Length: 309
Image 1: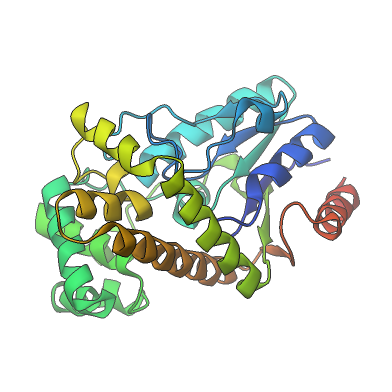
Image 2: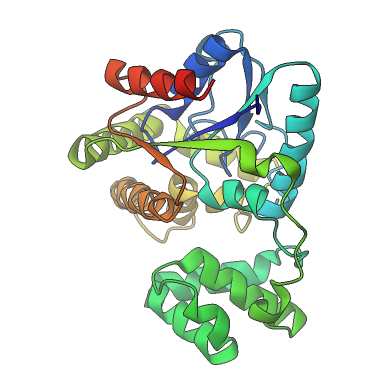
């Protein structure tokens, strides 16, 4: 029988971590982090990294292992995740990918072309343009230099628009021309069974708001101050994450603390919406209506897994 690899995804604050651990305990699995912020060392409070208690003895991989001054790419994560999958299966265990970074998961199943490493200064400039003029403006910029790539990217998908612009400005080549030069999918790609949490939107947003306030109350500003004092640059991917970016703006005097908190809430709510939109485009996703801790969600997940085995 074909061995399955499981992926638990969904929007931020939906309970992916706890559900992934439950699944690992049931099937003899180990968790591979699929979150683009949890990879960074020292970026703690607003990342929802699982504690040792929350891990419940389940081995976790690719968490807290990248220097925050390194702009680690989706392609690099896919390479590292593939190595962990092979290693975990060699020990007779089950790999379980857990996290909400859909681009990471897609890059694992559909390898990217070997593009240039992120230029932090260029990315910050593009971020600033997007903040000032909106995601649609970035998309319009991409359309001018690479119409074929822009045609495949939604106007509000600022991440993919920025990547297309980065490739062009760093290499002089069009992303649309380079993308066909990608490797074949790994052997295990077809064995990944994707489950996506889909909690009620209003309850999810309430949880996001409360969690954001809790992060600030837990000392997020002091954490960022310490990171900056330790030499972490505020133009890195690590400190470009939602609440961290707004704290950096607060520390630079660009907004007050209340504004930083409220803008962080809005950022994370918008991100959750984009995550759900992304996973709706994954044709093989199995949707689980509710939060990861809901008994009905666990029952449906385990029923799907039992039926497959």
